[in-house]
Structures are given as C-alpha cells and as structure tokens.
Image 1: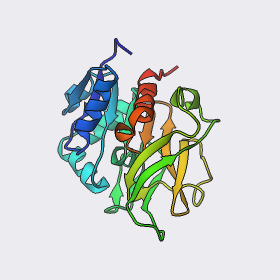
Image 2: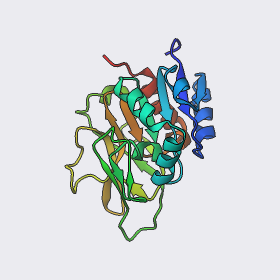
Image 3: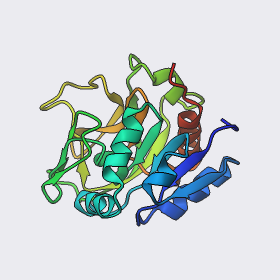
Length: 215
C-alpha cells in the first residue's frame, strides 16, 4: 500500500474534506484529483459524494471526468464510491431521472416508507459471506459493526433483485426496505454509508479497500 498513489476525486463534493481527513488518519498520503490527466497517475481512487446524483453527474461531465472515470475502473484500478459517489456507479437514479456511470448493475430509487426521509443514523450490516471480496472487506470488522447513513435514495434489494445479489457486499434496512449498504464487483467498490464519518469501523473499511489486491 505504501508504494501506491491514492487519489481522492475533487469535483466539488461536499464531503471531500472529511474523506481527506479520514485518509490522513490512516497515515496514508492522498492526492486531490481534479483532471483526467491527474486521474491516470494514481493507483487507486476514492470517489466522494454529497448532494444529488444529477448534480454529481453534471459536475463529472462538465469537468470531463465521467468517461475517464469509467475507463479508470474498467482498466482494473481500484475505485471506491461513497454515498452519492456509490449511487452514480450504478445505471440510473430516480433522483432527477439521472443516467449514471453504469459500472455496477443497480438502479437507485427514493425511500417510500412511513419513517422520516432522509434516513439518518447508525445501522449494522448483514454481510454477504459468499462474496468474492468478503474476506478483505470485513477484515478486522465485527459482524455487528455499525456504519453511519444520511440518504434519501438507495439501491433496494429483495424486490426487483434477490436478497444479497452477487455485487452486494452487505445490506441493511430502513422503514422495512432492504437496501445495499456496501457493494463491490472486483475492483469497483461502493459504500452507501458515510464511511468517512463512521469512526473506527469506517476507517477500517477504507483501510481494507486500500489493502485489496486484484489477483
């Protein structure tokens, strides 16, 4: 991990600073990535996100980062999306009827429940122990580790898709609706939870991603 260059995508997302501080707390030096040229000089990338999927995709397109970001991931370099950064890794978001990056096979919809939306609070994760990346992702984390969430939209499971499909590392629920909390397919990872604000367990998950090797 020490020989690698870690980047944090800086495209105007509100949680860039908190992600940067989380990485620093792991004693890992990370570079702010603002251009496609800078993107291809890093070994792995963290993709923050706060706000709306439509706004995120607009910023990526305006800054000429959308296609290079897809190429980065398809070339096998590790990519971790956080919150909205995870949501736009999917195919489509109901939020603004937004076509997303299409790197993972899910669609994002708004919570439809009696409970207050957005969903805000701490949830434990039901891990998918059959997932190829499970051992690395859960390293040094307990089965009942709690992560912090703030979101109104999610990739729901158990309705159109079966519970714990192959790309879901872990799921949780709110208002009786199960949704993907952590996702992964090979080098592409996503966290609906704000891992950068989840204390020790969030830092551990980030460290686990930084330790992942494409073998």
